[in-house]
Image 1 (cartoon, rainbow, N blue to C red):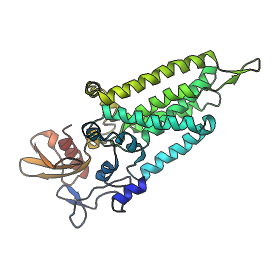
Image 2 (image 1 turned 90 degrees about the vertical axis):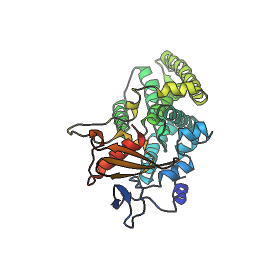
Image 3 (image 1 turned 30 degrees about the vertical axis):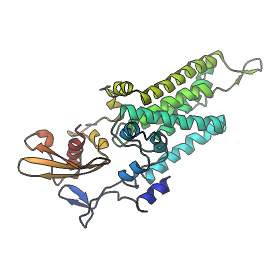
Image 4 (image 1 turned 60 degrees about the vertical axis):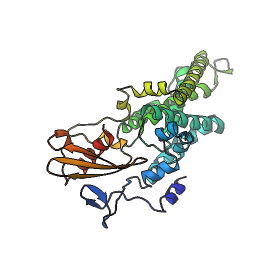
Length: 334
């Protein structure tokens, strides 16, 4: 699939950073428009064309296949390698313990549920990658710990503490822009519930018999009900605009996906608006106004003025970060 992406991008990778600045607009040295990709991959337009998560296309153009396709596309070579490294480290050990079929079901369903969570709670943002499925594997690892260690009142050899550290680290990484933390959280919840339903292993009791504990059986029943509830919620979100609007009305939920960090600095380390601008933007200024020319994916180009007398419109033409931050704010209106 990644080879197909690069083929659609003209058999070339986008540059890590654009080599020139043409009046606030990133460009090549010859003045032509440039779209950088620090993950070493194609343009956003190519990812959208091949099946990125795009809620407008899914709901308004009935392109439901995007819910599946976005899990098998990646934003760049580095993105692909990181996800596949996680699949090898987590998936292979789980597959040896629980078999190919159960892990395959968990991997696919976690990806689908994570995508639907992102579609509902993070509209207007293109997303690609196996992140939801990978976090489904993380949730499955926790299901293994809960079902086969906690339910037997022991954590010996469970690796729970290292798993906790890695889970928290990855969720914190998901609070940065350009990373879809709703896919992470949705995939994790689905992987945990499915794993609790399918991953129970018998143990030997003091009499030498192999059987499940009462707690294991109770967890299976509760998690199976929860899994059916997740399935029902997914179907409801897919067919009901009321459910979609209810999910998108959650004002606190945006903090799950991105938080602007100001530790040790007066300005945030990053702007959460950046993730809502899939495309390119040029910024120009005159004596009274800064004007952003927004050329976004699947939208006609448009311009947004901002009075320089407003502190929110402050930027420096010599500071690429301030240009990108203001451009993202004006184009996304966030």
